[in-house]
Each structure stands twice: as structure tokens, then as C-alpha cells.
Image 1 (cartoon, one colour):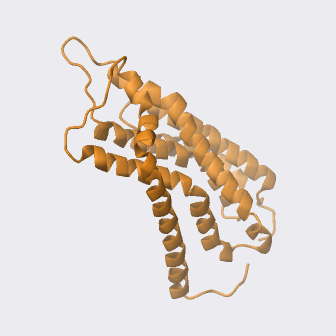
Image 2 (cartoon, helix red, strand yellow):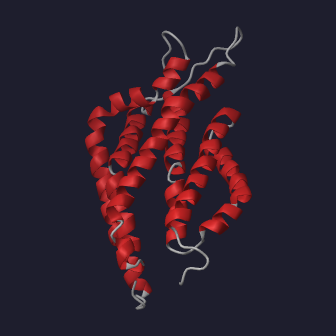
Image 3 (cartoon, rainbow, N blue to C red):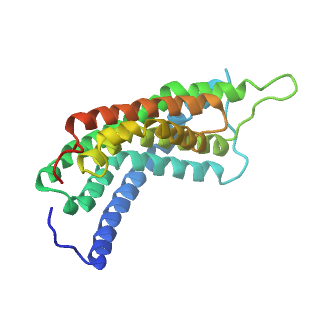
Length: 243
């Protein structure tokens, strides 16, 4: 890491460059995904449709609802497909402030980031989504029948999908704080009670207002935080290490 400080204009120029390539890659992937928007929508919202039972279908109440929901599907799929490039650009932006040996971790960083996000999204989709939609549909009775619209179902599905993906990045974030010397693993471990509180507050904000999804997001995040602390103990800097 060099001691020469770059002017703020250079940082802004670099940020603009990284954002340009990130957004361009995202939109290119989204454009390519639009051809399969219907299939992506069907796959993504399968847990909601399954919760409605045999013959259950989502509804469209506005003339433009199907079209714009499919665009959102393509944008979500494009974001997922563009993740390796997005993480690469993030690393390229922060790399000038790292030591030479830390800069070499770009490929492991990109791979781990992508795999963690994908793993979190798959975890939420396979285990949490069915429970959440079954929970909401359980309130149907002889007086009222669930008749969900595609727009209203797509919104919480997307939020949960991204929430679980981002949440599973926690070990990498904790490891990064430790390996760069910002916070030691010992201090991160001592912060655990406060981290648990923060985790459940974040889970309550990101998930629908039901206990099931909050617990299924909060509990894994606590485990992931402790996993990150454990990795930081092995590879991170310690309090007695030279700065």
C-alpha cells in the first residue's frame, strides 16, 4: 500500500469508471435475460403458486402489470448473472488502498462473494420462501380466499431473495475488517451480543412482518458472523501485530 494520497477528484473518477462498467454489465445481462423473463418469473414465484394449492394462479390487475413485472424479473436475473463482474469492480476500486499481497486475493474474493450470495439466495428460496407463503396463505378461510397479484408477490420475493444473498456475505465482510486491521477478531468476538441485536433488527427490516422469515434470516446470519470471526482468528491481524 502506498503512502501517496490521491486527490478526491481521482477517487471520484475511478468510482465513476467502476460504476459505469457495473451498470453496463448489469443491463447487458438483464437485456439477455428478458427473453426468458416468463420462465424466470415462473421459477422465482413457484413457492407462492404452490402455497395457493392445486389450480392456484397469480393475478394481474393492471394492463401493464405483467410487462413491467417481467422487466423487473430480467433486472433481477441480470444482477445475479453480473455478480462476478460487480464484485470484480468493487475489488478494483478498493485495491489501490491495499498491500501488494492483499491485492492478489482478487480471484478468491470474487469467487467467494459470488458463491456466498448465490448460496444465500438458494437457501432462502428452497427453505424459507415455501414457509413464508404457506404462513400467509394459512389465514384463508370460508370468508376469504387468497387471491394474490403477481406484483404484490414479486415484491417480497425479490426483497427476500436479495436479503438472503447479501446476508450470506457477512463472513467475508467480517474477514475483510479483520485482515485489513480495521477491527481485530478478538474485538469482533466481544461485539457478538451487539451483533446479535443488530442482526435481528436488520432481519426485521428486510423480511415481511412474520416471525418465520425473520428467524430464518437472523439465525443463519448469527452463525455466519461467528464463522467470519473464526476465520478472522486464523487469518486476520491480532492486537499485538505491528501496524
